[in-house]
Image 1 (tube, rainbow, N blue to C red):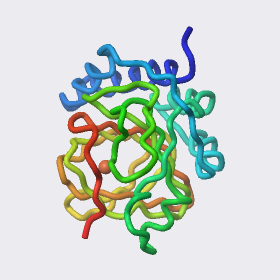
Image 2 (image 1 turned 45 degrees about the vertical axis):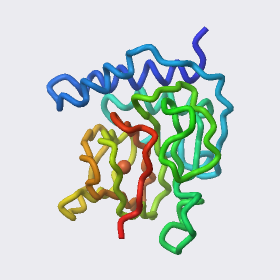
Image 3 (image 1 turned 180 degrees about the vertical axis):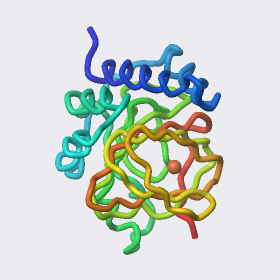
Length: 215
Ligand SMILES: [Fe+2]
């Protein structure tokens, strides 16, 4: 019988498939990875205050195809493995907000965790050594500083319009329904204004790699 993680898997796969039509071929590769057999894990769900506070308000800002994902997250977001980012990096004022203002919920990824910079590395609901897929929540008026990583990353905005930094140093507002790719080690970041941000993200190679804050 399908549980919350199965529903989320089916829903995000359908939405990514919609974006793959006419889009970058790497979005199609992600669909192939999502529809390949995945190892199911009896997840040990965790949650965080930022999820409790901002998941529903951010999901309410969804528009377009991602609306189905927003609705699934409201119902089944508690089946994800929610984690803080950069827990194991020495605390600085720049990243201290992350402990309260940002979380990511893993649906698919390596058994030993992904990102390499948060603990504990519980297995996610679906285990894969090929791909990471998760969801992120960022509170209003917070900055996810410039960072980079080896994996090629595909992002989709579910709810909330934030400013996104790309590798040319430009900050661009990206509304719900936006899908875009960060190339290996391309600098990127996000800053929210009055709205929270709910997004999906996938690493389509090197899913056990680590993200690094930019110098
Ligand atoms: Fe990234």
